[in-house]
Length: 283
Image 1 (tube, helix red, strand yellow):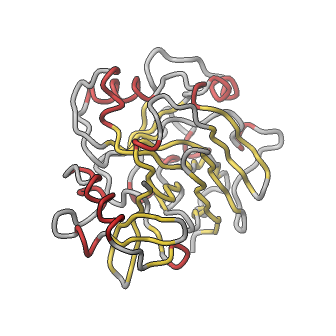
Image 2: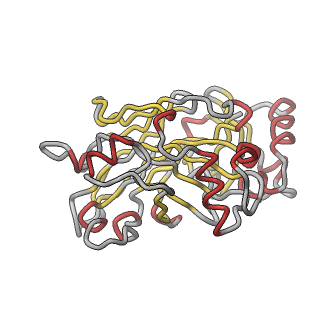
């Protein structure tokens, strides 16, 4: 099942994607769950699937303004340096524990929206990643149990303003410029993707493949990430873990490749879909 968050008649809604059509779940389940995050938290994914079977679609996907898959996440954890090729191109070393940094919700845009290049820097880079959406709360989750805590998966572009990122040892500013990260287009529920299923992850910029890897090359796999993060903070439904980017980032190319107005950047995951964002300058 593919679930989206979107605007309809000025209201934030959520629904199930069926091909080119959408079943709007907000009028059906809205009293129980006003948004996708609460649908997940209240364990209503099965009810959503039943509703989608029993109610005809009333909306066209192409006509909707999408929102980031989870518009109101409590926590967004990002994993840095999690593919060997990316570690090597940055000249760093593999760490025994995951490298963690945080993103803020306002740093994100949805599928179909433009990523915004700030006037303070034109070193805006792409990073193809897979996002994990937490479905069941937990603290000190064991790796063997981690798959049971996943509601679903999405595509993510961890857009990074590189000179602000590397100005100090702390990455937060460069990873959180307003509207620089893409999250979408939808969440594919975990029943559609088997535990440890190998997924192919790519960045395609203006039709050119710049990143291309598979998830079996992660240094710290998804259960390890969930176990590690939940050791220091409880994980809650709707929390997002962005699982790391492979080699081939623009900042490490010769010459470097940075996002510029007019570009179209796609993050493609074979088991999920394609997140597509244009690029524009901040106004």
